[in-house]
Image (spheres, rainbow, N blue to C red):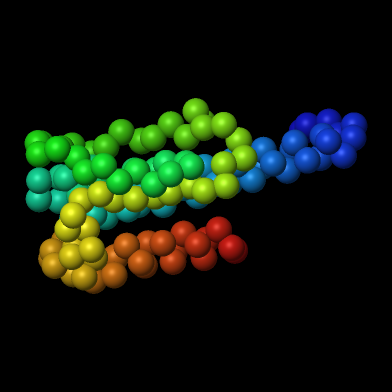
Length: 121
Protein backbone atom coordinates (compact mmCIF):
# COMPACT_ATOMS: atom_id res chain seq x y z
CA UNK A 1 0.00 0.00 0.00
CA UNK A 2 1.50 3.38 -0.98
CA UNK A 3 2.26 5.87 1.77
CA UNK A 4 0.33 9.14 1.64
CA UNK A 5 2.29 12.08 3.01
CA UNK A 6 0.64 14.91 1.06
CA UNK A 7 -2.12 15.78 -1.39
CA UNK A 8 0.43 15.34 -4.20
CA UNK A 9 0.84 11.74 -3.11
CA UNK A 10 -2.93 11.24 -3.31
CA UNK A 11 -2.96 12.71 -6.83
CA UNK A 12 -0.15 10.39 -7.94
CA UNK A 13 -1.81 7.32 -6.42
CA UNK A 14 -5.20 8.10 -7.99
CA UNK A 15 -3.63 8.87 -11.37
CA UNK A 16 -1.75 5.58 -11.28
CA UNK A 17 -4.90 3.64 -10.36
CA UNK A 18 -6.79 5.24 -13.25
CA UNK A 19 -4.03 4.35 -15.71
CA UNK A 20 -3.96 0.74 -14.49
CA UNK A 21 -7.76 0.52 -14.87
CA UNK A 22 -7.55 1.98 -18.41
CA UNK A 23 -4.90 -0.53 -19.44
CA UNK A 24 -6.83 -3.44 -17.92
CA UNK A 25 -10.05 -2.34 -19.63
CA UNK A 26 -8.39 -1.87 -23.02
CA UNK A 27 -6.51 -5.18 -22.87
CA UNK A 28 -9.60 -7.11 -21.81
CA UNK A 29 -11.64 -5.56 -24.60
CA UNK A 30 -8.84 -6.08 -27.15
CA UNK A 31 -8.43 -9.75 -26.19
CA UNK A 32 -12.11 -10.56 -26.53
CA UNK A 33 -12.43 -8.70 -29.84
CA UNK A 34 -9.40 -10.56 -31.20
CA UNK A 35 -10.71 -13.92 -29.99
CA UNK A 36 -14.22 -13.43 -31.37
CA UNK A 37 -13.42 -11.81 -34.74
CA UNK A 38 -14.23 -14.19 -37.61
CA UNK A 39 -11.17 -15.68 -39.30
CA UNK A 40 -10.70 -16.54 -42.96
CA UNK A 41 -7.30 -15.08 -43.80
CA UNK A 42 -6.83 -13.72 -40.27
CA UNK A 43 -6.45 -10.12 -41.45
CA UNK A 44 -9.49 -8.78 -39.58
CA UNK A 45 -8.38 -10.47 -36.37
CA UNK A 46 -4.80 -9.21 -36.78
CA UNK A 47 -6.01 -5.65 -37.48
CA UNK A 48 -7.14 -4.83 -33.92
CA UNK A 49 -4.79 -2.14 -32.57
CA UNK A 50 -4.62 -0.15 -29.35
CA UNK A 51 -3.00 3.26 -29.58
CA UNK A 52 -2.84 6.40 -27.49
CA UNK A 53 -2.86 9.98 -28.69
CA UNK A 54 -4.02 9.02 -32.20
CA UNK A 55 -6.04 6.31 -33.90
CA UNK A 56 -3.97 3.63 -35.70
CA UNK A 57 -5.56 3.46 -39.15
CA UNK A 58 -2.87 1.91 -41.36
CA UNK A 59 -4.19 -1.16 -43.15
CA UNK A 60 -2.12 -4.34 -42.89
CA UNK A 61 -0.49 -5.56 -46.11
CA UNK A 62 -1.64 -8.72 -47.88
CA UNK A 63 -0.24 -11.81 -46.19
CA UNK A 64 -0.84 -14.64 -43.78
CA UNK A 65 -1.84 -13.64 -40.31
CA UNK A 66 -1.75 -15.40 -36.97
CA UNK A 67 -3.19 -14.18 -33.70
CA UNK A 68 -1.68 -10.76 -33.02
CA UNK A 69 0.74 -10.33 -30.16
CA UNK A 70 -0.80 -8.77 -27.05
CA UNK A 71 0.18 -5.09 -26.97
CA UNK A 72 2.44 -3.88 -24.17
CA UNK A 73 0.52 -0.92 -22.79
CA UNK A 74 2.99 -0.30 -19.96
CA UNK A 75 5.25 1.46 -22.47
CA UNK A 76 2.81 4.36 -22.71
CA UNK A 77 3.44 7.29 -20.43
CA UNK A 78 0.73 8.41 -18.04
CA UNK A 79 -1.98 10.98 -18.57
CA UNK A 80 -2.93 10.17 -22.12
CA UNK A 81 -6.43 11.50 -22.53
CA UNK A 82 -7.34 9.51 -25.62
CA UNK A 83 -6.93 5.78 -26.00
CA UNK A 84 -8.07 4.19 -29.27
CA UNK A 85 -9.05 0.66 -30.18
CA UNK A 86 -9.29 0.37 -33.94
CA UNK A 87 -9.53 -2.21 -36.68
CA UNK A 88 -8.18 -1.19 -40.08
CA UNK A 89 -9.55 -4.16 -42.04
CA UNK A 90 -11.73 -2.55 -44.73
CA UNK A 91 -14.48 -5.14 -44.21
CA UNK A 92 -14.71 -5.12 -40.39
CA UNK A 93 -18.06 -3.27 -40.54
CA UNK A 94 -19.45 -5.94 -42.84
CA UNK A 95 -18.29 -8.66 -40.44
CA UNK A 96 -20.10 -6.80 -37.65
CA UNK A 97 -23.36 -6.98 -39.67
CA UNK A 98 -23.28 -10.79 -39.52
CA UNK A 99 -21.65 -11.39 -42.92
CA UNK A 100 -19.67 -14.32 -41.51
CA UNK A 101 -21.39 -17.28 -39.89
CA UNK A 102 -18.55 -17.30 -37.33
CA UNK A 103 -19.93 -14.27 -35.45
CA UNK A 104 -23.43 -12.86 -34.98
CA UNK A 105 -24.49 -9.44 -36.20
CA UNK A 106 -23.39 -6.78 -33.73
CA UNK A 107 -20.67 -8.91 -32.14
CA UNK A 108 -18.38 -5.89 -31.76
CA UNK A 109 -21.12 -3.79 -30.15
CA UNK A 110 -22.08 -6.56 -27.72
CA UNK A 111 -18.46 -7.11 -26.65
CA UNK A 112 -18.00 -3.39 -26.01
CA UNK A 113 -21.27 -3.18 -24.06
CA UNK A 114 -20.22 -6.17 -21.95
CA UNK A 115 -16.88 -4.61 -21.03
CA UNK A 116 -18.36 -1.18 -20.31
CA UNK A 117 -20.98 -2.78 -18.03
CA UNK A 118 -18.27 -4.77 -16.25
CA UNK A 119 -16.16 -1.61 -15.77
CA UNK A 120 -19.16 0.23 -14.33
CA UNK A 121 -20.13 -2.57 -11.92
